[in-house]
Length: 473
Image 1 (cartoon, rainbow, N blue to C red):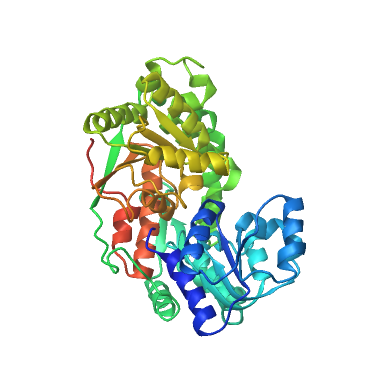
Image 2 (image 1 turned 60 degrees about the horizontal axis):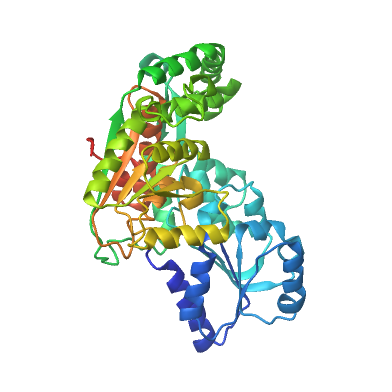
């Protein structure tokens, strides 16, 4: 979020070495994208410490293990979450007992059953420190996972997990909403979670550190389905009518059994795949081959056939006229592929970053986008791959082309632009298609933002997570 967490930890480790005589060994685990930032901050603020970047293929890791790690010729070992899982020789056998174990972007450990969480639990250490701007993303079970990692003897066991999980659940009220899932929050448990976090969490916000940041204005822009999209949306619904009926019966059975018709019932019978196809239609009908009217051709249909693409075209025209740069986020690389065609058709200079972008290419693209003399106008970014570790203050317009189920993912993406170093007001356009499944997704995202706001006592999460005012560019 650009609040200096990396710098603070670097200064803390230097303090331990200089004032307390504790030089390590320390382990810092961070997403690959932010490892260069950690290297730079540790070099600047921890000058007395030897920092080892533990990253590479199996042969390179083996060389570092035998020549540097085992002899103990380092103070801080810096690595990625992927390496934590892959390098069993070091991280799978407690070869080293760490003085401080630091996890950056610790929300990566929210799923207790995931391989990365298991790898984190295997590490032997004296102390742990979790860094995250989003300790609570979807539900309180994720918060339980982080707390159990810190205090396994306190939060271990199925009973503790069940208590956290019950604080925020899905139910279904068929008579009131035709089977649409409704979020139910247990206020007492949510308030108890806030009280529990108070002594365990040091929280910094942009307001608390009095950053002189320009304002961020979020506009929720609803667009209609184009005629082609409408036909595609109807076709998907009719083709998968049996799947939808099966899911509805599963909800009814869950209710009859006293289960409330929760989330598990809604994933029965492939309904999530149906939802994925509907979301593709909302982004652009060309994402479904049967409705790509001009496959491979760069024509006006690229803009005309999608309500979102038509609105994006207007936003980019206004941005170009104002001399603004734009970052466009989408969850899917296929959507980015279509947007590439749209930008190419409109002769708009752009860069792209997604999960397949190499480390070197990533640094090159960010450097180009940050160059005020470069002609590039747009940066296409995958929400998951580019949501952390990027500084894109060269832009002051953000387009959320689609919304994540998890509002914190979108919030982190927006913070790539609205962060320390930004000198201009930032406008965020969140695009959503009217009278489609995207309206329900926004509802769930808003409810999750309410949960975070109540647990963390921060109403601004509602502004960032639930969308802003309406209107267009």
